[in-house]
Image 1: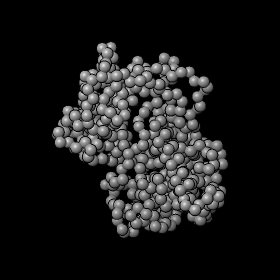
Image 2: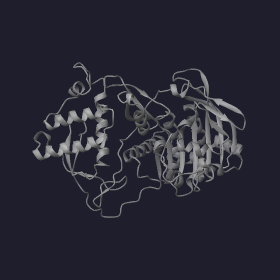
Image 3: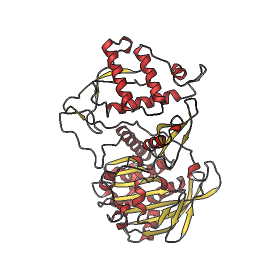
Length: 481
């Protein structure tokens, strides 16, 4: 089965899309690590004064003219309906919205269909996006209270002057990152670390320390741990969008390899306007199920060393991170984003068009993943890649990847076991930069066994040589796939 046919195991991306606001009238409205927007209590909609009604209408006009609601028409119709009802002092029910805005029948079961809640959530995010960018200096703002289907008008006030200098952002932090998603990623790190370190019956902290001591002394891990550079666990993610069922609902989720971001989808809709009411940006991504397993294996190795650790998505990876921190990529070979060009530039391997193929250009052999649908009871072969190379500024980049889930799981197991690490070291000798391909046997989504197929040294000058266009890391790069 090709990856284009595999649309299973889709998981909603954690966190909300919130842009980092800028500066207005000399004071900072908010940053990813420092000040926050202070809000006055919502005005009572059921008793709107004339000037409050005018302000809400003025804010609504500004929101419409900003085009933040997009081109599909669905969010605009929902916004206009909620505005009309709110100005009239009415709080509509979910069923009323379904009938009046989405064309549903009066027998529509809101408990079985989340369409209305999805669009309310999406509209709330769009309003927040507007007021952290174009509308950052507005004297008031329109918001949707959590758990409600109405608009409220909120006043704003600048935050008080800080008592001390704000802490600088972590190395590699970019102004265009999404703060709430970063927070969700850090919560993921904490959760996984706690699961691994504290929910293993009969395993004491001392036993765990002894277990990982030999692993941390290995050349791979010691180079990642014996300095002050932060470590970014970069998890390969995939953008997905929705297809409308023609009645304003979501019929299915779609993954297309040429649409890897909301911006790509918007470009597609500009080129094909007839798809405007068919394709819906739901701000969703999915992660391979092997990602959590691999994080669970690898985070305990680095966690006790008091290193600055963050988990980010490939779509949020920036060139500055690649330049200033250690990078540990976890995921499918097809989800490496900008790392793919750098990691494969010096490699003997290339990736086939379907991303299920690993081509050994030196050995003249092609390895094809046999992974099929979940639930299969037949043994199949999958292929994992471990790559370790020096970054552009003396930092290290570790690739823990595979064509499918079981290969990712096995490569994580190789790097978290002293015996298999020793076998890997023996195969590459004293090469400081190297790669290794593993043939992994799996059943369903379980790694059964694996063997080292081929390993070789890497010439990292091919990755970072500025004469090589693929090796240039531009200062203004952002994540892409």
